[in-house]
Amino acid sequence: MRFLHTADWHLGKTLRGHSRQAEHEKVLDELARAAVDARVDAVLIAGDVYDGAMPPPEAEALAFDFLARLRAHDIPCVLIAGNHDQPKKLAALRGLLESLRIHVRAEPRPADQGGVVELRARDGNERALVAALPFVPERKVVDATTLLAAEQAGHVRYAERIADVLAVLARSFTPSTVNLVLAHVLVSGARFGTGERQLHLGEIYALPPERLPPTAHYCALGHLHRPQEIQGAPCRAAYAGSPIELDFGEREQQKRAVLVEARPGLPAKLEEVPLAGGRALRDLEGTLAELERAAAGAGDAWLRVTVHVQAPEAGVEEKVRRVLPNALEVRQQWPREAAAAAPAPAVARDPQQLFAAFCRRDSGTEPRPALLELFAELHAEAAGETP
Image (cartoon, rainbow, N blue to C red; front, side, top):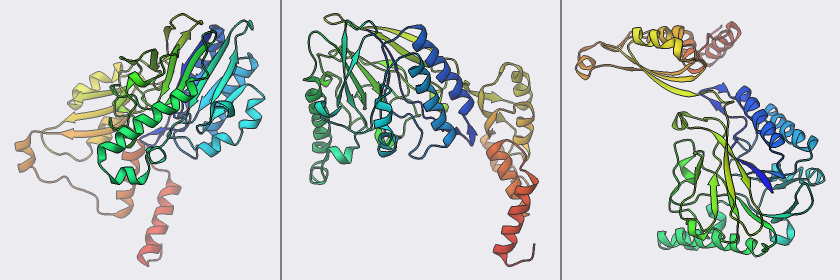
């Protein structure tokens, strides 16, 4: 049987106020075409479908359009909730989606109540069992009394309980089935960038790789955005990673999905499916003249720019964005001795000018006149003046 493993879409994500909707649309198209072309028996989505508990409607439309494309090609899907998803929101449509062979698991369940999903191969000759473990917050795994005791005890208790949950689910596995784990969890020893929120990435609240079920052919993991295979696990296990570079901590990562081929009694085979729908994130550094020369090679990448100046200088951000319109962040760098001697750059004192400068810095575009007018009215009202 063949499966396409993907995770951590974070639909609805913005970067410095800029929408990533168009990039997500392209990359989900890549994923749908890869699933169809490879004639997979199912798609596995390992959590963090959305970037927040209340995703914008256009983000939800992208997700449902993707699932509809799978249904049109008779490809089932197993989808679990991640730490960014709202479990109850995902679970709301479970009954409807189940009839379409889209199996949503928003919260952990016993094996006989949906915790293990059975899938059939396209030809009907083989079966797969998918043990689904959505994200479980630490507070729900480790009780308060343990947390108030020795700190290490809580961390050990967390690892033990998550491992026990997976072991219980894996009891459903048989020698005649393709056995898979689909989990949104941190495995210790894995590498991560700055794209994941640190709250959920303390190494201490992690599952040791050796505690993954040895009877699984493959563990399809979500939570970390860096694509990687897990070392030290008793079975093949990997993070698919996020399909686009979500922030500058993920720059220069080759984004991908994982194509998994497995048969009963044989080790799983993994193949990378490169994804190119997202725009690159790049750092550029140099003088204004050097940045001007580098502009032609920047393409459509989102940029974080450091401009070298002799001393702090007003208006540099605007000059940089004229030659590098995709610059999301512009920082000045100058010699330390110059900083001590240089006078502070002149700053406009008029509140409306300050607000306009803030808008340009935040969005990279000129604020609309209507927005400036509204700001002036609100500022006058707050100050007790007549606009």
